Image 1: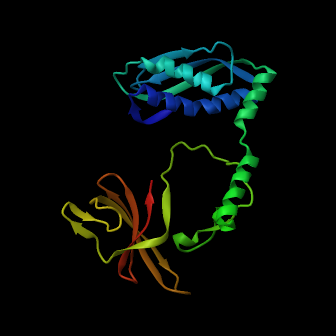
Image 2 (image 1 turned 90 degrees about the vertical axis):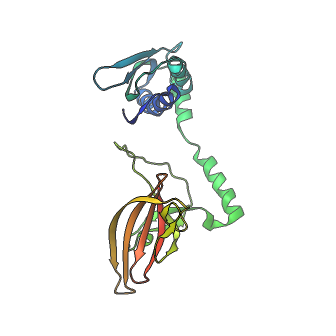
Image 3 (image 1 turned 120 degrees about the vertical axis):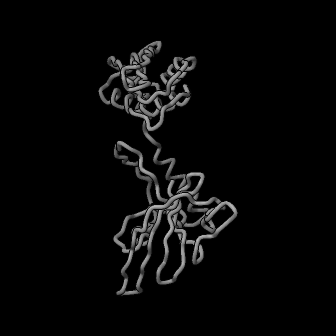
Length: 250
C-alpha cells in the first residue's frame, strides 16, 4: 500500500497496518487457514530503503486484536529518520482448527437483528420517517438526483475496492443564501455563512441550466477553498442574481 503522505509516527503505522489486516484475515479464514506469522515491510524512500519486521503469535491465530497488539509492540521503539511511503504485509498461514474458524466467523458477522431492534426503537420515539435510506434518481438539479425512502430492514454494505479514496460532497437540505456578492472582511473576501475565513482559490464555473419546461434555471457552481483547507460548494443563481451555499466537500 502506497501512502499519500510520508508517515513518521509508529502509532500511525499501526493503524494503517490494522486497516490492511482485516482483508488478510478474511482471506485466510476463507481458505481455512490461520496466521502463523506476519512479515511487515516499511518502504522509506522507494529506492530499496526498507525496514522489515516479523511478528509471530504464540500459536497460529485469526484474532486481529492479538496480532495488532504484537504489531504495536514491534513498532513502538522504531526510530524513523525518514517517513514511510509504502507498507507491505504478508501473512504466513497454516491450516486452522475448527474452533478458530468458528470464532472468526462469529466475530466477522454483524448482528443484523440487533441493528433492526435499535432502529425500531428510533422509529418508536421519532416516527417512521426518522429511519430512511438514500435512493439515486434521475433529476436535472443536484437536489433532485436522490430521494429518501423508508428503511424497513438493515442491509449489509457492499463496498467496492478503490485505489484512491474519494472526497465526499455533503449536500445541504436547503441551499443557504449568501447574498449578491462575497463579503469583504479585514482578512480578505469570504463567504457569508461559511465562517469568517477568506477564500484562497476556486474551481469553476460548472453550469447547470435548463428547466424551461417548468421554471428556468441557470446556476454556475464553484468549489471554493478557504484558508484552512475547507471546501465549499457554492453557486451563483443567474436568474435570482444571488449566491448560495449548497454543500461542503470533506
